[in-house]
Image (cartoon, rainbow, N blue to C red; front, side, top):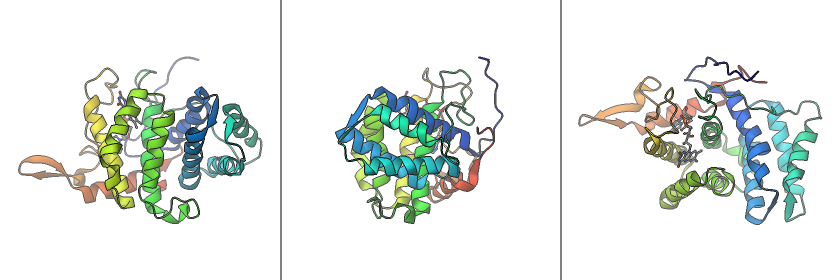
Length: 265
Ligand code: FAD
């Protein structure tokens, strides 16, 4: 008890345990600091839950829970709900068989070499990339939600989530700056996938060498050449990206087929 055992993992794969730990933390820890939800907060939560309910590529037990949460939020006649009602719903619905979300974090691809490093922010990035990739791959999943045919809608919802709920305020402000400048230019689901990739690399380079960096996971432009050699090309002697290849790589990396259930509860 209390000792951290390193979990061997493959950097070319995505882990169910990371995505599910992220959802658990988001629903049971991050939201819990808001004792009641109303107005823009409630609208943001509803939209965010709709997105994950429709697009989360994980196990059916989790997807069913997300769908039940989404249906419940959509059916509420209230403008304001206590956070405890959300928590009760999540915990009560889990008594139904075939509905389950882990109630602890278990980081794999997001584990840090010290407990305060990586974890949730890493998982949130992975969840966000996964959602943009799934929205491109399965646009029909969003039909009837109001998000269909709106290539910016997924990113705008993630942006609102960060602004409203993400515990790191400073991160939210930086992200808002980036979104304000360039999100409007996104016109297709492919551009949405690449927009998030580019902005994440900007964050990576800003944070390189800072105290929050895990020495075992140095910040670098991603995907590194070992993960995707074809993504890198040389133009006039300088390393640059082949964005067509990057898009293909992201579509594969953040796909359902690349998810591994190893280490999942
Ligand atoms: P992360 O940057 O968390 O990346 C997680 C994983 O995503 C990587 O391991 C890799 O597999 C993959 N990945 C990496 N780059 C890309 C990419 N370009 N495209 C697709 N996948 C990629 N921290 C701060 O100190 N200041 C901030 O302003 C700040 N802003 C943030 C904004 C957001 C929206 C989020 C979610 C987090 C922010 N953070 C910020 C936290 C920070 O970005 C990292 O999440 C944290 O430092 C942990 O880093 P990490 O090494 O686990 O890799």
